[in-house]
Length: 298
Image (tube, rainbow, N blue to C red):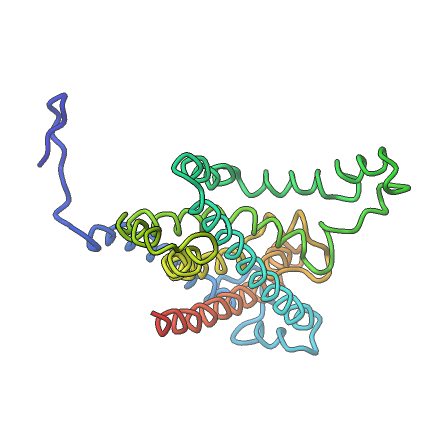
């Protein structure tokens, strides 16, 4: 038991260290397992919405390349892998570059730089996606400004950056949103390093890029690489940015799954759940492979 200044008595859980995460992990794990169990069950025909609902593995048979749903599924899977991997790598590079720049500044510059990763963290993904659309779209602010200044004849002459077939807009969105998160992880790793380490580097003349290469990057890359796996999993399953900044073909798996789920044809509901199962399996496979790589790296 613990007491506050006002005299109130607070109960303290008898858990310390990693065990203190058990209650939260248990609740989140239970919710995730229930959701995944429901998805697998409905993909196999449980909870049918009509008498003609496919049962067994019929929904998975529709994921074959010769089926219209299957053909779009595998093109969407390749597009999702490309966008997710590129977004994660771009966010990691931006975060590492910003941390390297912050470390080369003086104490005042470091304090100012440390505030950078708080700027975009509070913005919801929908707000950031709409902002990119309004600024970078072919009818957006930059396009209109270029037309006003005579750089382009019409706003539509501006190169397509958002709503493009290569997913550039989606990648820019997640790079801008997830880089501050990775910076926060790397900054925490830098903060726990003993100050004598930096003083020793200064004494030995390790300045500029040499200091970054020998002192900063070895410290921040490992925790940021682990956090990048969370970023990758999030990007694969996120919906808002691909729906706002993407195109109808190809679509990311999250958009395809929701469109199948919301289809007026209720017979596509098990196929939508099957796509969700395939997406989860794909994410878990990539995360396990990346986890093995990071573990060997350590």
